[in-house]
Length: 197
Image (tube, rainbow, N blue to C red; front, top):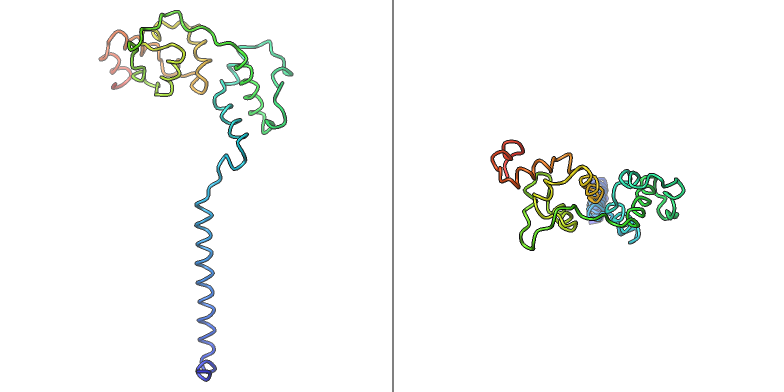
């Protein structure tokens, strides 16, 4: 056996090197798969960044808060922003706007009377209104097409500031005209202008 190894030592050395390379490749591939499966999560940094991010998502746009309180000074706008929020200027402005919006009392609902329980319309029929917006509108006391159809420009501005991430949708998606057609039962006119229901 020893003589056979001495006679073919080059072949044995080559087989050993190939075996080591295959083992190294398999080990490296297995480690790579484990690394790819583990994706970082926002909670890896702790709960505070996740809560801060959720507060920024739920806060009304900074421009709307600035329009609502034009007399606020720069110092007041940055009050209470602490070193834990100094991740960027956008976060600072968003946090200040969120604090101002939280401190403000919500304005009253539109003058249109709310319907009795169970009499609300399916607001999802309005193009651009999904389940989250329906929930938000219902929490503001808006449940019928007639209520939306009766909004004035002041009502639109007031409600738009309460829509958070959905601000601007009322005018962009033309909710008033859609609601007028739906409350009048003009399905053909609605579908001709806005598409199938």
